[in-house]
Length: 173
Length: 173
Image (cartoon, rainbow over all chains, first blue to last red; front, top):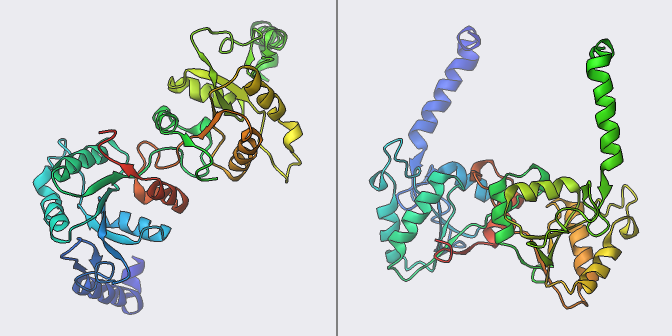
């Protein structure tokens, strides 16, 4: 109602903005990221390390990793996770293109940064299998206690993972 | 009001239960755990590995780790964390006793399972320093993505930790 009432000042600019977005946003042909250029700003940035490819599920994950400002490589967006329930198979994700890309750019490392959910880990396993024959190091994100996490509030699975992956202190102290 | 109204059936049994608890609960002289025996059931259990000591802040953390059923060693409860703001120094925690215990039982490994908060990590650093001269391996819990965690919802610090501590897949696949 608010939109209709203020048709001139609110609704029309909104329509204009939305159609601008619809016109300008493209999917990057290399990584699948959304940007107004193709290839996207990350893929075309010469300061980023192209041989290190971080595989994520979604564009939102790229934004999350970019916010953290740690990662200096490039991304590959799958567009989802394998899910038998939802009928999403390997052919629905950009896995073929990842394998081709790894061969083409002679990638050194593929970081499987899928979520720590059942679907995410299944997808990571599947991709690791696909890449097993190629000469590339396949790594996964560390699982454990999140920053600020108090033991008391954590689930059993996380405590399990954190305990079994414990590491010597002194390396990072 | 409910308690007073049902004095005979609710309030009196409650008073009785609370005083039973107050009478029977003891602090374990070895680890600082609360139990109705001293030493506590964990310290006196011969099936647990006494040379592996897990250092936690609080009894609640012992319960959390026991729920996860991963850890087969024994605990040492600090009773808090170092905190300059709250005026809690090393002498207020059970750190002296930990150092003495490590020497007495010839511990193989001390796992510093303090929270991933600033205070928790400060305390872990301090204890690692205290134990540096002893012949014991000091480890910390792994930091990273919690089980079920989606990248999109995680904070920068956790993503940072998970990325920098990434590890080769194939070891655990």
